Image (cartoon, rainbow, N blue to C red):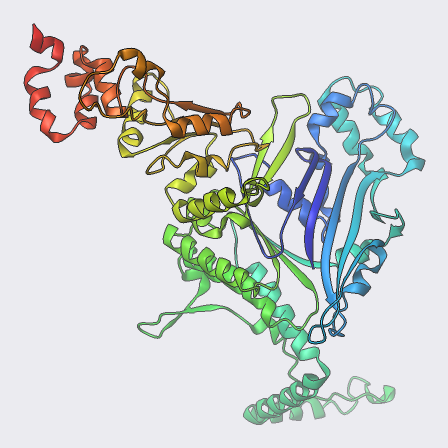
Length: 585
């Protein structure tokens, strides 16, 4: 059972937002303030709806509507979850159908007939609608509070005073029938692990698991016997002091009047321990075998331990809850190699269908995206250019679906999966991207930008060397993508080598490489993609740079750009002569 789709209206910076997920691992990437944490918080509301505050209302919507709309009616937050689950006729322990019963629509149950060897499967979709709105009977009170507000801040202050009139309403998103809050809260066990994480979440899970084990009918009796045995052992060990206390107690002899009430002082040793509270996590030094508390260990390894245990504890839980883990920036305090190894492991067990829970991860780490897998990665952005500012999302898996050219799309996807290493993964996080053929362009473009007064790092521009002319594979990520990132492709003209008689200059000027023709045709309707190549008679980037700057001393000897680009055989020529103009004069 997992969240297949979420719709969010007027919650935090989401105005009217929708996003689809997959079972297992979901890695969500995006720039700062793109909405990654807000998305996780919206998911968490299913288990903790009472955490709502005035700052959870979409303030862009309020700003545009508080004068003309929200002085007559109150704003509201609405979140709808689409839950997908498969059940089998054979699995009699699956209680999910009972949990989902209030949220089912009969048109959303699909029967998958099995063979004699495989039982019939049912695909179930449930819709849970959560609406945070004002009690209609208190609308007049709200209007009185906000009627005099003439600025956004005054309105928000008045709205905050009116929050006592607001409450959550839970319904079946299909039939609109009312449901109980408890039914929604108990659908999933959700753990939210913030970037600044500690062991509290782990201890909550382990102690709950231990308590459930102790309370089990088969185990309760043995634990009671154990406590009695320990109590008796303690009494034996402290029997001398118990004897002394007994002597004092027996001397009372009604001196203070207890006998009249048929009361006497008795003593015993009775152990009533909290076994779960006694559980701790320590760190063992594997070289010297000593133990140290987790609090005395390095933060990076502690984070790794905490995340691993929360992921794996689901395997020993006796509960039949369906679980989710919202993991915010797991790279915090974690060495890049450890990030890579952790997500290699997560990817492996996800591919093997052994994750046993839905995990949502937000990250800025190219080490994580390099190994997470394209099918698991979702891009998130917050677009404020228009009045209707809102979040927007895109699955990278969708970017490589092309019904008209499925083989080309599959080839591009395989190429990306092969070459999307830690360095190239940076293209997924950048605001704008420059794709170049080779290392010369990658090294020199930042120098050009510095000379032009453009800081490519401050503008979050990523320069990616793709190792050839396979721009099409990389452009699949950005073409027809609602997350509209600008992409510049710098490629070589590669005019054919002259063999024999010289050709007219006009032929060079009119020549267009085949790969450029194909790119131009494929992406002619994509305004966010630009393709550039040489115009001053060069075949390659290095040729063009030399021909365009041969008469400029500062480009050869001053900043030494040509010296960087040209081969070592030309270095003595450049050092001796400066420029061709200098040589000719």
